[in-house]
Length: 306
Image (cartoon, rainbow, N blue to C red; front, side):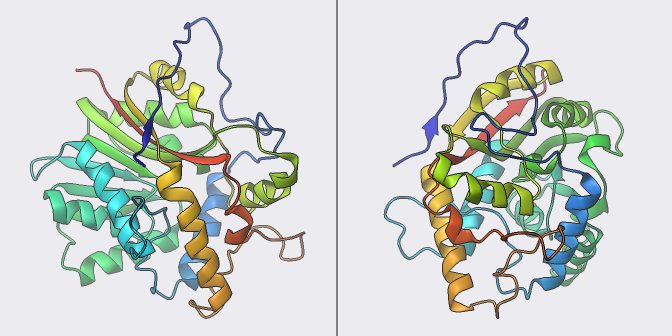
């Protein structure tokens, strides 16, 4: 099954569309992400990572017959799908918003020749990414900086493209971040991102699992109909919105759950950490989300007008 393209209904500019809210349409409790808290979360995850995952923390992309494809391979495939939509080559510069430990940025640099600047609110991720780039001999083509996407430390018109792989949901205000990205993009520059969204109302029996996921990973969920108005108000032109849930979400959670159950990571990274008090409530586990089909993933492409 191929990814599904949304055809969002037209929304008159006079109709206000809410930004990320503390409570989703299903009544699922969420939190406004705070960059410092998100940074501490990823500092802890980075310190726990043994490197066996290849530094990959994002979803994979599988076709229907990809039974033998590993999570690392599938994650690289999703990175490549997004990279192809950037339309960049060795003459271009790319901003990676929420760069993790730098594996996608390095892959983009290798595949396209573009110079990639990655940013993160985790100092631990920035340090790890910088070290890995040096080991890979890519220090001249990628760089990593501690920075908040809500206040990008770059001049206007600094980049030819921007990518954000599963990072926008950690930010307090998606629309504001879109505006910051538009500001630093050159005219015609493209933004490609993936985000989590609520495909349909979360059933009552699944809400506790969703609450734990959003709480422990400090995320908010969007709704598909929000994107076009947000992009328009931010000064970006909508290009593409694909529902990639069927290709990405269930299999990623299944593989993460298997790793946790089998101790493939020595009982460390397989046990997601939280910035909240260790004594507080039940913790999220990947197996909790395997059957929550309402938890979706989208791939979005937009462009700064010429």
